[in-house]
Image 1: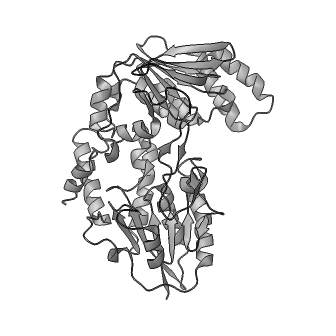
Image 2: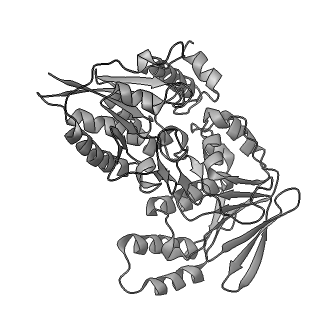
Image 3: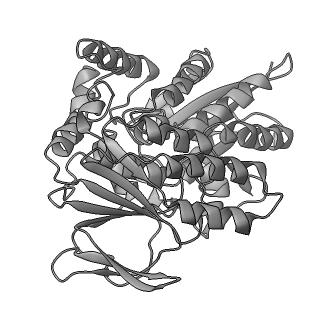
Length: 422
């Protein structure tokens, strides 16, 4: 029976769903041997380092990933970086197909004056910091101000604003990075503005995220009722279902605001940022609004306006994503997930996306190659295998149980390698 070798670059949701799709296409005529390659010592991508710690249910998809990884034809090669340890062309020469599943990790910029001031940063840095991504363990977040501004109108912006506005003790039972919890407990921030360029009817929040906001026990959540009512009028008599649901939830929040807490999260709609103000550090944001220019004084600005893919040598890019046609790149190279379509959809969106690309990949295959695999390319590189990752995983969960958390994450690359026994 022919065995086709497939390398998947990136161990996030898109990568695992691509592996699952390959497993589903195995039959009496062919087998797929899958080698998954990941730059970090840990897999799971955004499920580990992107999903907000106070939303643990979303992370349960990792159980699906572990089931996929248990297949005897699956191998994990984590702590291996494409470019420095092995190249895409190397992989293409060894495998029948190579699938790029590296996601989008670079935050888009506003392109306005003041964006490089100290105190201005991207959610692409802030989110992995509080999620214990080893590349961001030493990030310094200026939390000594009383007011912060988050710019964006999607779930990432909402996660960032919520993390800044909640009582940090609420994170004690989550897998938030220890260093981030300690820093947030010392934070002076008591007011967080979440600003959106367009009106509530255009916000990209999902309704479950909005419904979570009134459950914040120590935070006022303020949405202008007039803003929502005007949005309802603009949306017309037959708005799309998601828009209507969002507006209904926002109206409910607007009609039942909390006002008894010292911490507040407030939405600012129809606020277009023109300039981040300050000389040596952030001092405010100048906005254009329907009523004229408005300045919001603050000491921290976090932008959450989208992501683009980090380029890899040997892979063509265009408009922040891999150039492709329905997932085909060139030769035996393919792409799935955010790297293919841009940062859109939820985690589950990657499943159908990957399945479609893998069907094309499988249809393209003819005769298997027989000239080795990645093990011939790594030399003395320290590799985290599935077995070593399970050791890290079990140790983190055990350490978390003692503290009433789902896990206590290793925060640096060195710590993770030590947990693995390396």
